[in-house]
Amino acid sequence: MSDARSNILGRLRAGKPDLPAAATPTQIPLASWDTQGRVEQFRNKMESVRAEVHVTPRDSWLDLLRRLVAEKQISNLLYAPDGPLGDALSQAWKSQDQSPLIARTAAVDEWKEELFFNVGGAVTSTRWGIAETGTLVLWPTPEEPRSFSLVPPVHFAILQARDIHDTFADLVEQESWHRGMPTNALLISGPSKTADIEQTLAYGVHGPIELIIIVIAENNAFPVT
Image 1 (spheres, one colour):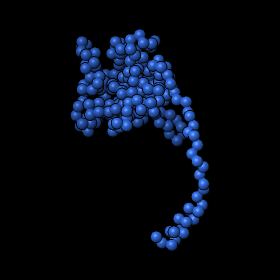
Image 2 (cartoon, rainbow, N blue to C red):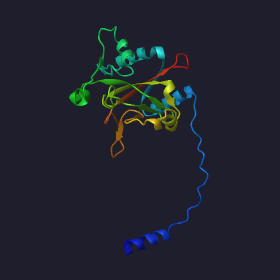
Image 3 (cartoon, helix red, strand yellow):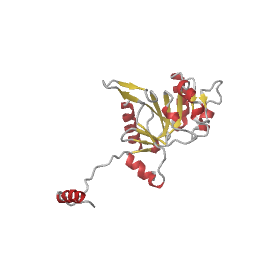
């Protein structure tokens, strides 16, 4: 070691302050809600950033989705036929003359122009929700890639009320992320938004302009809207 380096390190060590012994960690009260409270907190947070949240019984969510698609005049709705919602969605429009559902299983690069310019909306499953911050947690797969929730202008997200956790820390612990971290977890807290240097807020610049969440509650578990 050179003399110059030794001198520098010596001065640094000599000037190092004595650190006090570690204090007792501060106890921060954690958020805690029952199922209904988690849904209400999740909804309030999401609606505060202009997301649309509907709570519905399990046996009515497909009817609600069909109604919303019709009201918003979405001509085609991208979905994953091999994803968690595939069979239910296929059956929902099976008896109708015209179905808005479209499916694409090829690599995104092969139909990128259609995805960016011709798809009106998409519907995806979600793995979990976070009540404290109003956040959806998606775990994209090859069958249901992240582009479904990031590109189309309208994103319908289907969430089970029982899968809403109090906090992100609760989610990580209770779902045992330490045993298998997701390679591509996607956290969504509202529709896409950005602001320019003058702080003018704009929606939909980098992703969906509308985020519509259908929360499925166990029938008669608590009031639905």
